[in-house]
Image (cartoon, rainbow, N blue to C red; front, side, top):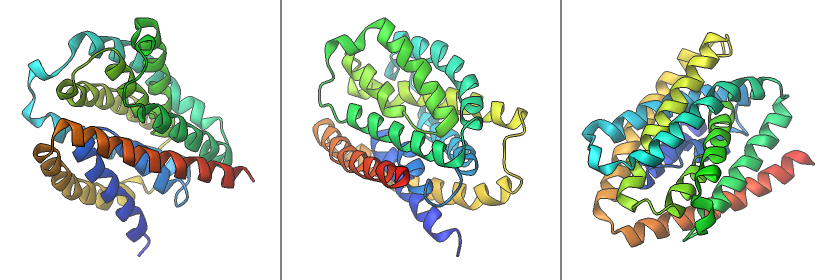
Length: 244
């Protein structure tokens, strides 16, 4: 019974990533932040996100990756991925929840931009965002849409955004998870918690992928924008509520 609500959150988040190519961690963190302590929820989200990334990349096509931006994201993002777990470990549960929800709100608002401003696609902006998102993702399991906005601002084609982000998210998630495990930051009952939720996520991902393959790029953008408006509103409201 204790897994019903977390399982529902994970299913929705996994289906959403199947459709959009990003956003699993964002939705999962938003939903689980009120059910589980951040230090428990974050490694669960990271591990499930790694598995979903492998599902996205199972039909890997080199031509569907923007390699120039991918290298920038990986180099600076992996630096942030090592730092993130230690930043999160220094915060109390309440402060971690507030930080998580602020990151959710900011990431969602940025990702809502239909056409991000051109200056946002600059190399320096990308390097800072890649490192910052690495910290956010490995520490709090949120922030991915910021990287998506940078790709779009730099002119990366929609068809390449999905795979480029999958490589970046997978690498950051993996290094963040390894850092947590190596530092003894995983909860004692981690395996028992993550296995049923992982199974739910895998089953829910495939319907989302089927939807993605059947919709146009214009409808894809609209689905992302509308969903992220809702996420931003809920994230902001939750942050205000927790702060009171």
